[in-house]
Each structure stands twice: as structure tokens, then as C-alpha cells.
Length: 134
Image 1: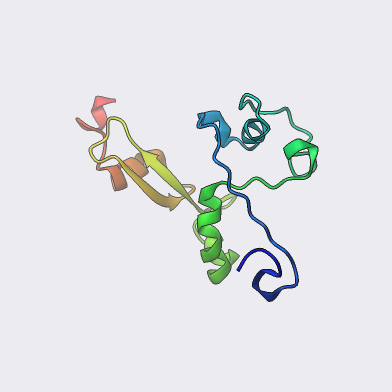
Image 2: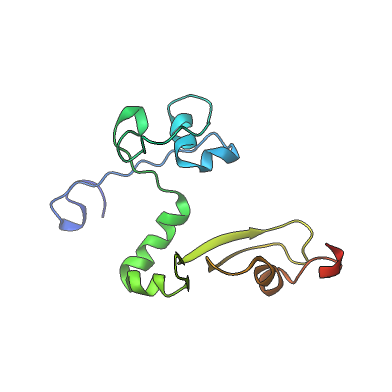
């Protein structure tokens, strides 16, 4: 579907997947760009933003795997469907990795605006030893 004449659109659409350096900070888009350029993965000062001056000084779009994974569903169901999750100014869903002193560590997709306490109780079975243990 991608590449030359993607989906019969008349446009070429090439995707390059590149593994980052593995550092947590490379999850920040400009830190990832630095890493891809062979530099230490440290965030850049903004502006300029990557859309205007990104990889090797060229306009760039940086997308993480989470965004790529949910995009087909949003395309099928529409932006209004996705925006139906969450609250004003904090819409959509997010993958949350819950670990540490919880009863059931888990990765779960949930609304962006879910309170942390509700997230932990609903999906991870609460804090080990109960909430008074904090």
C-alpha cells in the first residue's frame, strides 16, 4: 500500500523505521533526531521545530510507534470517534505502562484524562498493601 503511487493516490509515500539509541530521552522527538544523526540523544532547543528544521536540517515528521499503531483505527472510525475519549483539551487514548508497587503490572490503553488513582485501581488492581501504603 505504501511506496510509489501509495493506495493508487498518485503520491509516493515512503516510510523509514529506525531504531533509536534506546535511551529514555530519545522518546522526545528532537532527542530522537539527535540520536538518528549520530549525536547524543539530547533534546534540542525549540524553535525551530522539526516540521521546519528536523533531521539533518530538513523538514521532518517524527512519529512514535503508538501513533502509527492507532492511526488506521482513527482513519476508519474518524477523528470525532477518537476525540470522544477523554475531556476537553485532553482527548484521545494513550498507552499507560503501570509497574512498580502495584498488584498487577500491566500495559493498557485508556483515555488520556483518566485520573492516576483510577487508572491504577481499575487496571493494576491497586497499590500493593493498599492505598494507605503510599
